[in-house]
Length: 430
Ligand code: AMP
Ligand code: GLY
Image (cartoon, rainbow, N blue to C red):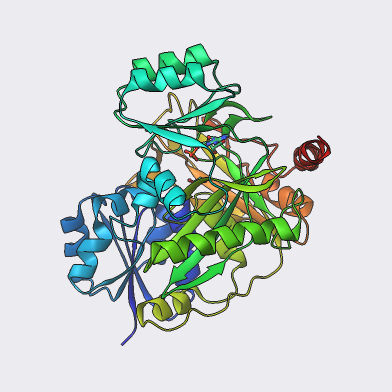
C-alpha cells in the first residue's frame, strides 16, 4: 500500500515539507488552522482544524488512513498530538509531549543540559518568583538574558545589554505574568542553526543555517519568528570553521544520547562564541524559515527517512546538493508587534522566476489569499554561492507587489555576511 503521510501545520516550513514529499510515492494529506494554498495544492486533501487539539488531528488522521504523520510546529507537540497519534497506532515523526519539553520548557531544557553534563550550556538559574529573579539581576556580574520558560514564539526573550537595560529587564519581569523564568549568561557571538533528523538512536545533520530574528534591516527592531535565512554550499557558514560546525554536531549527538528514544527533528540554536558553539536553545521540530533552506537541497528523499524511522531501520545517510540558499520572508505590515491581519495578498507566482515560493501563514478563502498575524510567504534562491542565491531570492520578492508587506532586503547580501565574518574575527582577536 502507498504510504499516507499526514502533514500537520500550515506555515512556510510545512509548505517546504509538503514539497519534499510531493514528488515521492506517498499520498499527502494536510491539516492546519489556516488554509495554506501551497500545501493545499500539493495534498490529496486539506482539512482546516485546530492542530493543538489531539482528538481533532487523530480523527482526521484516521479518516485519511494515515500511516505516518509529520508534525511541523511546536504547539501540537506541546499539546500531545504525537502521543495521541501513536496511541492510535499512527507513527508520528515528532517527539511526544514529554520529550518536546526540550523546546517547550526552557527551564527543563537548561536543567537537562546541566544534569547530563552536555557541552555548551551557559551559566543559568531558574526562577518561579519574579522578585527573586530581579534580585539575581542586581547581584549578577555581567549581562543576563531573561527567558520565559514556556513557548513565546521566539518573542518573549529580553537580552540585557542589547535590547534592554537591567532596570528595563526588571520592569519587564514585574509587568509580565510569566510564572517561571530562566536567567542566563548573555553569550556574545554569531548565531546559527543545525537541524538533525533523529530516530532509532541515529542522528543525521543538515548544513548550518543562519536565521535573522530581528524585524528590520541591520538587525534592528523587535524579535520575530525569523525574517529570513541563508546557508552555504558547504556544511559550515562563512563565519565558522568546519571544526566549529562539527563541535555543534557533537553537542546535538550528546543531547540525543541523553534524551534516549527521541524521534523527529532536533534543532540546535547555537551561539558561536570565541570559545566555540554554545547552546541558545533546542527546538523539537524544523526551523521556520530554516526548513526552507534545508529541504530543497536534501537529495535523499524525505519519505525514506520517515519510513526508516517508522520501521526502526537505520536512518539513511543524507546527501545534500552542495548549493547555497537564501530565504527571505514577506510579513504583514506591522509584524510582529501590530501585524495587519486580513489584508488581501495577490501573489503572481509566474514572476518568482528561478526562486522557490513558499506560502506561510496566509489563509486562502473563496475570493483570494489573506494575511494572518504571522509571516505571509517566503522566496528561496538556490545557487553555487550565497551571493547568487541572494540575487535570485531578491528578484522574486516582488511577486506580491510591495503594498502591505514588509521584508528584509539585507539578508544574504555580501555586506551583512561580511559583518558576521568580521564580528567573529574581532571576537577571536580579543
Ligand atoms: P530563543 O527564544 O531562546 O531562541 O531566544 C530568542 C533570541 O534571544 C535568540 O535568537 C538570541 O538572539 C537571543 N538569546 C537567547 N539566549 C541568549 C543568550 N544566552 N545570549 C545571547 N542572546 C540570547
Ligand atoms: N527560526 C527560528 C525557529 O524556527 O524557531
